[in-house]
Image (cartoon, rainbow, N blue to C red; front, side, top):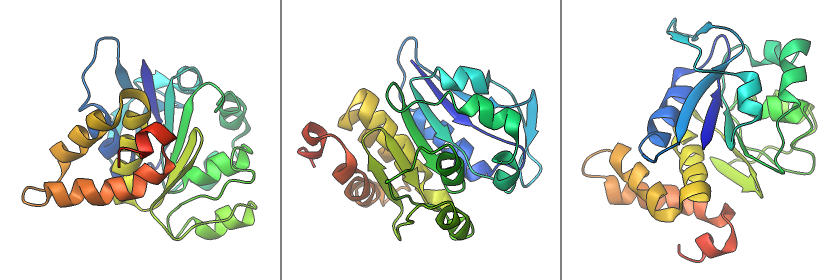
Length: 207
């Protein structure tokens, strides 16, 4: 099983790396989580350089994908080479999630047609201009597409993916591990209130 986090030049560390950490709390044979980049290395908005773990083409074949955010997302969606590859993303065979300005990528790919989205406050007008309704909430999902708004909503995307692929218990365990000491139960409960309504009926019924 492969989960890819699309990470571009100017990426936001909180979006890509927190999701990477939460997703890696689940250990299973044959399961891998990678940072997928368009080049051999990318530099974050704060100067953190990371090496490519997988390609964008690899991500299009992954079981689940998170489209990360960053300060150059508007440049990404105007890059024909990148967008040509990303047209291989397909919610009929993979889970697709977007963090903050990643929603703009999904919008430009036509994956948010008739689906509202969550995004950060800076990106909101660009997503609206792309014809997508933006919700004033941290997380939303419909079927196999999810979006989150605000850097610290990235664990919600990760937990949604874990819940879809591994079940509620695995998702709660991952959230519990990363939650602040003394606030773990409260944190997990709040996160689950945001995630559970958008899970398939059997998982939602457990909430």
